[in-house]
Picture 1 (cartoon, rainbow, N blue to C red):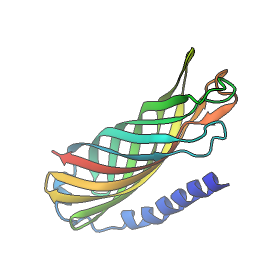
Picture 2 (tube, rainbow, N blue to C red; picture 1 turned 90 degrees about the horizontal axis):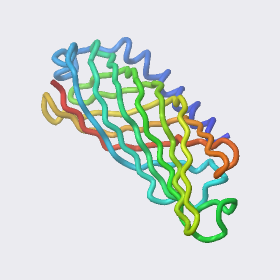
Picture 3 (cartoon, rainbow, N blue to C red; picture 1 turned 135 degrees about the vertical axis):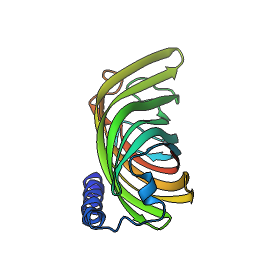
Picture 4 (tube, rainbow, N blue to C red; picture 1 turned 90 degrees about the vertical axis):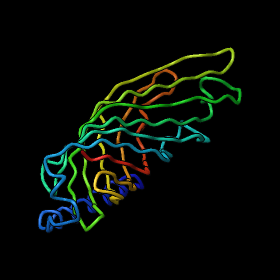
Length: 207
């Protein structure tokens, strides 16, 4: 129920922002110069995924992305990005009775459409996309070692803000929610959610 409410909140936020973007004045500072141009960016920050009952005592949760985009219109941008996450947790009791630690990581490439609201040096945006992601589980618990992996389609939504320090460089904050299922049988029985919530510090260079 908590995860459903998170998705509903994100959908409502995107829906609320979209009409504003559609009717926004495109005279934000530097905005006309960016239309028809490319940009590169990336970000790093925290990652949270607490819904899987099979995974206990999370630590080292970290995420990052690298992206390239094209400003198709004052209020629309299209991006291709690589997203990754990593976390550690207690080795499941079904695998070992010791107190070892296991590692779960996901990475992949997807496409994103962003709706942008320019406000002077600040740009607010909301968007979503789809991609293909691989999830890898590594268990190293002497003398037992194994690796399971799975590839599936993932869906993401995002909200963020960029601040233009100069005409060609911006920094910002971004929240993302990735929905990604993974099957890592027999090490972890049943399907797990390998996605989660991300909060990034971002940077972008505009050309």
